[in-house]
Length: 470
Image (cartoon, rainbow, N blue to C red; front, side):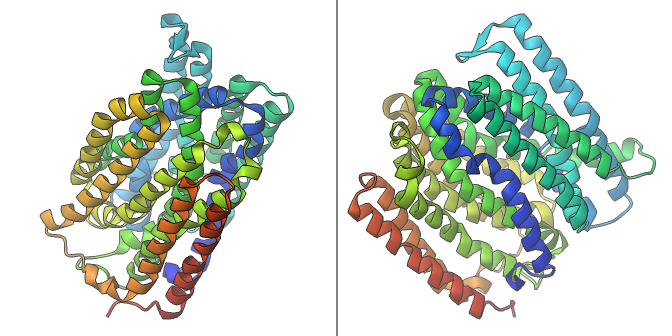
């Protein structure tokens, strides 16, 4: 795995473990779809997406700080990590427990879902930052594979076992969904606090101000990315039925396989981006970025081909309408895969956290403006179109922002990889087109199968001819 740059073999292990951990809900999704109706699945997805919005605002921006502080040690690094740990271990869980407990006092039902389910979902999501945004990124940034493996493996076992028992075996529906989330979050947080202790040392106002100056400007960025990716669920619930939300949710979850893989590959490369300097790329990021450019198209293409070939055997017929929705969303995932490259240079290399919020914010406005009309008139498909347009808007803005900030990124350094990138684009066009054809038809299967060949050729070419920047 030399294409991932220094430490590529270790980075591959991180990607595999993190991919399995975050992808476990997708692995058991076929079983869940057999016991939950689209309406029930829509309600469960609505709970998860809405709860994650809050934690995205209050905790997700810390992930970039943890990676950067661990990769670039200075006088502020240890205090910043201590502040981040205290916040994720104590402040966020306590706050979410209070908010969740108060919900039944004010409303019996929100967006068609009972308030007690919202309470459990919020309490569960409050414990997630301990592992997701502090313990895991800190272990990864410090290359502590043993500790990282312990946390992620236990999380995988708990999530899979609780979901299968509560949903598939006991068939507790939406209540079983949120209860399994709570069990997994509580145990993972306890394990994170046990294995990843807070860094020692004093903390004063100067350190708190340093953390705030880095993290707070990232809140609009993280919130906007969430809005592009997940706002469609609660927005669609307002203007359409929970069945449409369920179809959209399944389509998004299938498309999120690509998001998951692209994000984990990117996360493995964050230490390299944090050590990078301008003009970029140097040997630190040339190989990771070139691989990301190819995979941005190759991974969504493979997901689309797999769905077209085996989807009808995995999911019940009531969910087949979501396949074409997945195709539209996977095109957006390609834009997301490219978007994270300039975003890394802005956030991790330049530390331009204030400006990155404008990038995703402008795209989120596009989604917000188009969702009500498209969702009302075209249901889940309209919401998928709005989401994809939002990702392309984010990509465009992320390419423009480095020029505005006068950050030298020599994009022509990667021009030698045009054959692999072109083949991956061709594969994505063919595979997503196969999802627009009748499910299980011969043309759909032939097109999906044929679309895997350009991906294989592209990856072979890239592995053979990738070379560092001159």
